[in-house]
Image (tube, rainbow, N blue to C red):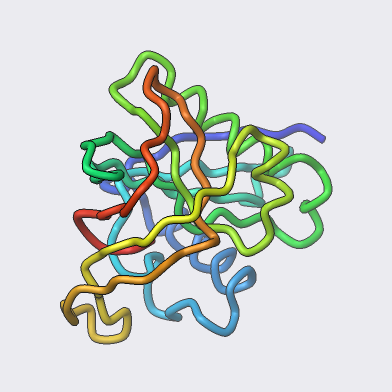
Length: 181
């Protein structure tokens, strides 16, 4: 399969891209994704979009760059948000190609870790991520009203990280210093 992956800054999305992304997100997360926008709680900084040979959008991964506090140590994190692949393309390596694009993006940049949440860890374990158990703290955002709803704190077991900088992950509480992906 011929696959083209394009990095698009959120500010550069056009109406066609937005419609295609929304269709893929709704197909992938039908019971939870808002039907009127292409983000859940907050806009990402950029997205990787995977297209097939017919220029159809078949894969998506958004990214959020920010500082976090891992066990008392500031870390620069690229967060993976809403990685999804069209149902008919899921066994064709599109997810791994999107993760490889994230890896290439991180090369030579001021990023310590790539972070994500995963219910099914299979794809991520194959691509160099490892599970981390941490008590997480974050700013709660009501995704329906898009308003701040307080501070959340919870032990998370779906958290996964990949080291892309020189430092190792610091165990302990993880303060997102913002919203939870």
